[in-house]
Amino acid sequence: MSLGVVVVAHVPEMAAGFAKLLQNVAPTVAITAAGGNSVGSVGTSMDQIERAFKENQATELLVFYDFGSARRNIELAAAFGDKNIYIYDAAFTEGAYTAATLLQAGQDRAAINADIQRLIIK
Amino acid sequence: MSLGVVVVAHVPEMAAGFAKLLQNVAPTVAITAAGGNSVGSVGTSMDQIERAFKENQATELLVFYDFGSARRNIELAAAFGDKNIYIYDAAFTEGAYTAATLLQAGQDRAAINADIQRLIIK
Image (tube, rainbow over all chains, first blue to last red):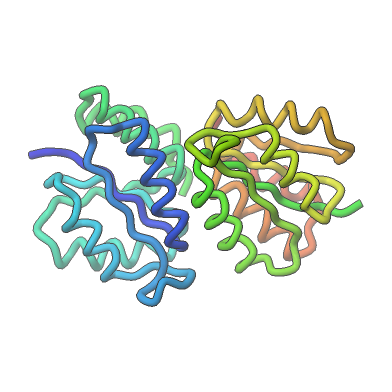
């Protein structure tokens, strides 16, 4: 079992840019992103999220999203895949950053969950 | 006096993509973005932030940033300009989204401050 991070945002550039930032601070952590709806406009897409789940080399994924409406698509994508998906209702940027840096430091999911409690704002 | 929103992120695409999302939900609010360091790599830049302050058509700016190291550059840029700058130590995406949508709904800064308290996590 390995842990990775997936970020889901309503705009493609936002998701891709954030994944780039996370990869910069957590170079050996598996990080993938899904952004925008199925035609790349503002929104999210179950297909894009499924792709980000598949592309991620980890088998357990910690998923962070920008706004509420993304959550439903994440849940749907999770139901179709065979990976363990953990959705975090945390501050998007701060939560994913915390998870990525703790994974980079070799921490497990219990440690991440404990640290991230302060960022649960949704 | 008019209120606007500025978002500051460590990656240019992230800042620009987020500003696009905010403008989508708050079409008549003045929103500008600064992302990346002076050469467009991961980081922030006082010059980029100053530009975002100047380009914003509002005279009072509510500023949101992704991570701590951005704050110092925001403070420096604020010191050089003639606008009133209010830096929010809030969850980046959720805080700026809340501010933009409340401004769009005609709320003032006191109302925004009250609502955003729950998002102060830095």
